[in-house]
Length: 92
Length: 472
Image (cartoon, rainbow over the protein chains, first blue to last red):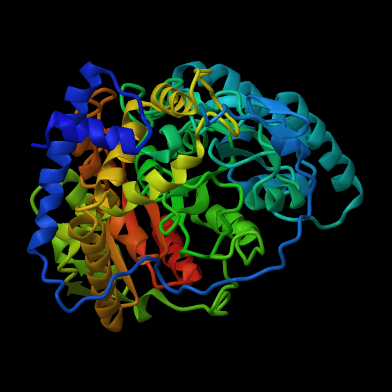
């Protein structure tokens, strides 16, 4: 079982607010899933390389040029100012 | 009834002017109005626009002697794929009011062929789930038995096709999300080879696994949609041109060597499902195909690897929903509180569970033990398939170990829900193409046969699956 403290730590890392009641639910669910996943320890992978991507990986480069105006995208933000996305101040 | 047709039949009807694209479109809109209350396959409709487009198609058909197979065909699009000007919610509160600023490449390609987009189909929130119960709006019901789930996460797409509310649909498949609902709804669903179809405009869930594919009434229809959407796209650097040009190479069933993995017929499978799938395999044997038992020894571990890799990638992909750039935003005093509250209240339980699971697997001290180990096991799973494909052309398995289950039956036990994906996730880990085709029913509940092929050999899968349809 993971601890309530660990659940709170993960939620903070993931930028998720969770209530006290949810905390216990997540603790139970995540512990059950992690217990199941633990069977991976039985596989001998000492000689095995990781796969991050199936089939093939190749970097694709293109010129850093904009093809469309950003107007439509900025307009989707909850707060904007002068065609910029507005954020909360981060300095006190 | 116009809504009973397949895409191929509807195309013939339009060519022979037996009915108009308007009539075809209206018949589907009317059926949606009749059935959607009960089934809830659609989250949003664009009836007026669709009818308008159908009228334009009719003008074109009146003068054109030939036109593409999808011209005038009414389709549904899973609501994690962007259609310009329409809301695209991913069935999440966090995107409840998000309006798509552009068309996904697959949508652009369908529109170019003249397909008529009817509306957006329901899904598990951000495609995370196996039952479509995780939709923030409401669950979709299985048209064959509305007390049961349609499978997920593309449950709305599959139910729309099975319920005669669309002639075809697009879904997305990260761990079985096209094949499972196709199986549960008694329709055909293809997860193409990784890279075969552009994901530009698909909301990213787990980028090394996601693929877009068709859900249709027949294998032939799946081929039509697949060919319309496949191909390299400069907007998705993982998309590629088809590597093999075996598009029209014909073969006979008796030339096929079909592998049946012993690890897929073990404890946990419903005996009725097993019987129907084995019967289907027998039909191929009777037609002269060679049936060989193969072993995929890491099958048992694939689900665990999947449930580390996919949440890990999801936790990174879903970091973009921050209450700042778009979507639901909780206006708090500090920036951190905007993040915490917007995400905490905007995401549903399963999405938060997976983000937390992924965050845990990637966090300091656990990365090696979980994420890196899962990636190594992924290599083992791929090696299993490579070894099997040295001996066989294709692999046949059930799509799901169990029949469509009751709505509410598994929703409170996440692990039991994850286990439903046990036969489908390996294929995504390996990037292979696989198709689910109906192979019978238990009572009124459909069962799917999963046909797994080698990379970019979708046509071999289509031809093989078509054979089974001709027997029915």
